[in-house]
Image (cartoon, rainbow, N blue to C red; front, side):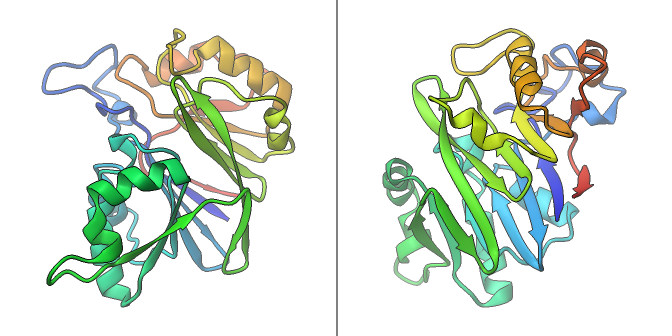
Length: 252
């Protein structure tokens, strides 16, 4: 399996705007972050989690010309606004790309992007809408998913083999955290150091890591308040964790 961090920035990206750098060192290129998406390649199957507004640029940089399925974590625009960019992937490969999402999210996407899933006048549909099940399969790849809390809404955590992705993360429900044991890699959202009404803070996430004991951790969905070197200084020495960066590839 190969996991590529397409983008690891929060909804604004990082830095915020020209000469609006937040708290990052702009001399460190790893602090320049597009919005969050991740690409998984396993057994010649290409799986995309979320469609950030920067998706075209991200897939071009990854030299990716085919997507077999898309999984959506939730309905916020920084995770869905790149949907129209998948039309090129559909045309290149002459296929309808399946998209998987919760039933609550499907209503929003059909409202905003009906032409993508049902066509409109001269536009034929280029994606199919599928409702998420707790366990399902794409080609010969097994995927499991469950909901975690993101403030006033829920978001999907996805697990594929010993890899898991939990963006926009506040807390787990019930005993769901135990579904993430024995991971080789956990990619988890770290919006900022302090706790936020919809996002766990750094100390909260470290507690989860200490409980789960994944072999490695990458932080994603980071704002311009998160400087790579500052995070590295704060991570306890017994934990194998680091901030992700755009274009980082991990082979598992």
